[in-house]
Length: 226
Image 1 (cartoon, helix red, strand yellow):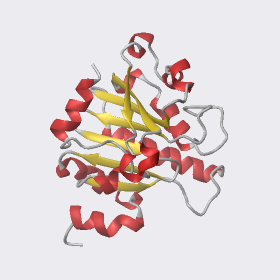
Image 2 (cartoon, helix red, strand yellow):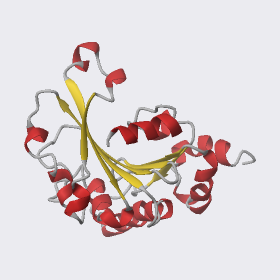
Image 3 (cartoon, helix red, strand yellow):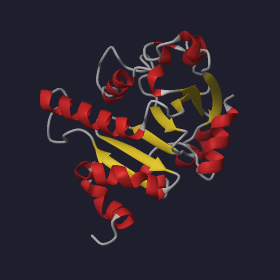
Image 4 (cartoon, helix red, strand yellow):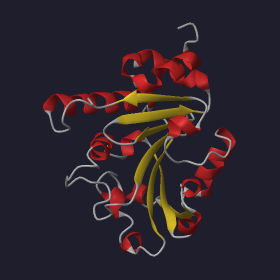
């Protein structure tokens, strides 16, 4: 089954290598500021904004009838035994139904960051990719988004507790709309799409949330008159 996701990327995203930063690696994308950079993470107003923005963008992108892939990538050394012992722990806290969990697929890949690494390190690192076909109703997406935003802080809800020091990325892929959502941490969120027109509603609805650093580039793409 896991080959279907790779066929999806090949057909709709020109065989795109799924890895961060999505916004800088794909031609049609948006980058949103999620947290308040000048406020401590644990401050109530900051946590409220993180929840409002991450969930607001997600709910705008994903409807109940949309077919999805929930993707988790773990970067680690090839000899690391952690995921061989308990790979499903990543999903047990967030997927509601054991029947859905049984659809979970695992793929061992060369590191998706191989182009960024020194040659002598490339053979040392691998990407464990977990692929779950699902729908929005099948998992606790609000809790998962919260866990992602807490991932850099000591919290019991960490998505891969015990894998500190290894890169962890969760992607929400809308198969129906051909869009990908990546909350990379509490700071920001990337959204890309196969077609630019599908991002226009997000650009219009959440324009005030666009990261200022990338606003000029985004405006040139979606509102060239600005």
